[in-house]
Length: 445
Image (cartoon, rainbow, N blue to C red):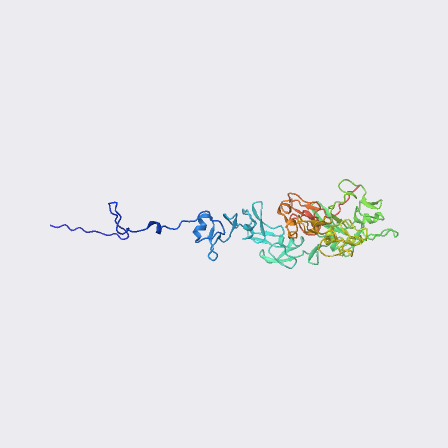
């Protein structure tokens, strides 16, 4: 009797011999020659690579770029120190680099570890930073319009979706701006006077409305402020604010009912430490118009009317220029913004005489670390003007570690040129450069 043994072969399996001898199948097999290539260690961003696995195992969120064969960050990630890829962020989310924010949300930056819109933009949801919208431009919300003009609003075409920027009723439209008429809500005296001469912004509690100044009365049609009749022998060319020269008390009284002409200068009848002829309330580096508004030195003696009474140009008398302007050696008055701009503006060229590397810059100019002399307004204006970039250092302009002489430190600690003071634009980002731009009101005796 014979026994038949059958063997069943399992697909994909094989038997190993029990003895230590090598199977004939494996004889001659070279383990060293067929070993898989080792994975390079310490690969950094922008290093050569053969596969994305090589990059990813060393640098999370990276891959091997197909075209260049170098390790780069995956889409919506940004490189950090060649060893890390950081994810892009939306508004209000964490960040380390500005590019994390701007990659997903244009016009956003990283501030104190969170993504925010740049100062001159306003956020919408988590993914948009809207630019200011002038009158008649399309808008998505009121704030977008108000960044361009504080009185405008977004008149929706499709409710709560989009519209166009418009002025409210009873506001004058002038050169793309809204100005309040008499009886309308206001924010500054100058806004009222722009629409109705001889008016001012009268504040009562939390409300403020345009009204006629003391010494003026509302016209019959309620659109003008007419001068109340006064003795015939008294003449008033312009109302004068405290701290400016005067010839009679009527000039002072027309601007402030509680002021008087004292020793040729308008002063409060009852001056105190907060409001007097020596401390009228404006920034020291600004120019005080006779009418009581304060403007940037940038506009003084620039041959353009910037004060309502034109005093920024009327006082530009040869050899007696305002201290906020530049006086050429021949006595001509110029705006300080023209000093060291590379062009002769003075007839004698004295505005460029002290602007050469190797000598001290003119006191009205800005000196770069490399000795280059530039107009003073170029300091921290978000445009690199110095060849060495020393006019736009982050530790100075944004962090405000120290502010040089003749500059201005905003309430948010940023440093800016004093040229931004009372310029009509928010140069700080918190509008602190646009406060104290009107002469104070004297207290009632």
